[in-house]
Each structure stands twice: as structure tokens, then as C-alpha cells.
Image (cartoon, rainbow, N blue to C red; front, top):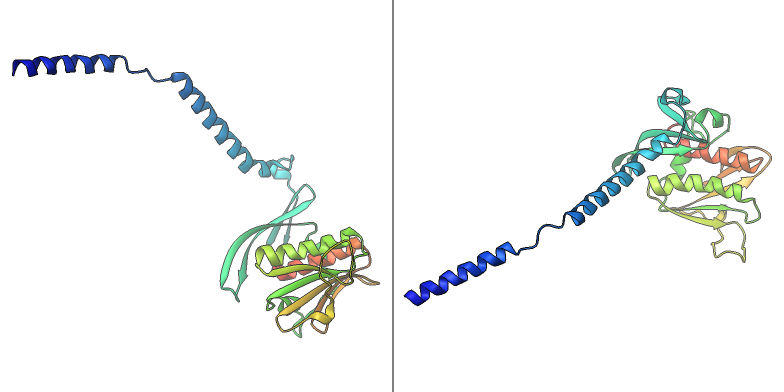
Length: 233
């Protein structure tokens, strides 16, 4: 029993000695860790707050336009509005912040497709489709294509439609499919961007034609259609 007690005593002393030799906390590493965390938090806050300060003007001086209850604020060259978008076919309701090149007032003059109650009916020809082709002549300036991008942004990103780009003629510079107004079907719709002698939106046997006298007019007509799709106009 005495031998065991001595052994236990030595063991206890050994453990106590090891505890004394335990490494002290590395304060330098802890300090570097805290600095790193602070930098990361600062970067995240900057990314969140930066868009709010894109416009260098005082908040009270931000140019605003109100159209049928929708408020548009100008940031740089873009008009931004917040709205609640509903899709009754899919059964959802979501908030969105969307930017435009123009306000509804600037494209209000453009004739569009209306029903007997003088309400926009272009969305009715589009929203029931499973796939939508946005097509244009490959010889047109690239700025005409920009109008198609604006339409695709709303149909694809907001309403989650299957939107495909296409051309009205074959072009060996791209693999884009050829689609015209002749290719519409029960679940397929075609939106064609054209240059013509009048800026307007009209239908050719169920095909939506977005036409402008100039490429810039085509962009305006395209945004007129996006306002209609969002129920702003």
C-alpha cells in the first residue's frame, strides 16, 4: 500500500509539472484572426450599402417619377422601381426591384395591342406559352438586340419562362436557331424585333412584333412591352 501511495504522489507531481509547461495562448494569432473577421465584415457591409450610394446626389435630390402609383427613382442612367409581381397561372407573388432605360411616360405614346376595353392584351398572347423565342434579323445593329434582352429579363428572370434567342435568317457566325412568326404554336410564342416605318407593337396572327423606326425606338417599344408584362401599363 505504501509503494502505491508513493507512485501516486510522483504521478501527481508529474501531472502538475506538465500543466505548468502548457503553452500560453497565442495572442498574436488571435489578434490577426479578429482583424481578418473585421475586414470580412467591412467588405460585406460595403457590398450591401454600395448600390445605395451609386447616385452621388443628396437623397433629397433624387429625381423621382410616379406613374399610376409606381414610383421610379433615377440612379445614374437607370430608372428603378420596386413592385410586387404576381403570376396567377403559377400561383406566386414576389417583390422585385427592376431597372429600366425609360419611364412609362416616355414610351406611353407607342401604339400597342389592346382589347375591346382598351386594355393591353399583348401579355395574354405571351404568358400562356411554355417556350418563347425572341428573334431578329442578324443584319440589324446590336442595339436592336438590346431590346430583346430587356424583354427576356422580365420573361425569364421574373416570370421564369423558357426564353430562347433566335434569328429570322441563318447566320454562320452563330448557332442560334432560325425562328419567325410562322413558327408559333399552341405552346410556342415568337416575339420579333423589327425596324420599320413606324414605332409600335402589333400582332401578326398571334406573333408579337416589336417595331421601331430606329434601333433606339426598338428599345423604347421593347420597354413598353415590359411595362405591360409587369402590369404597370
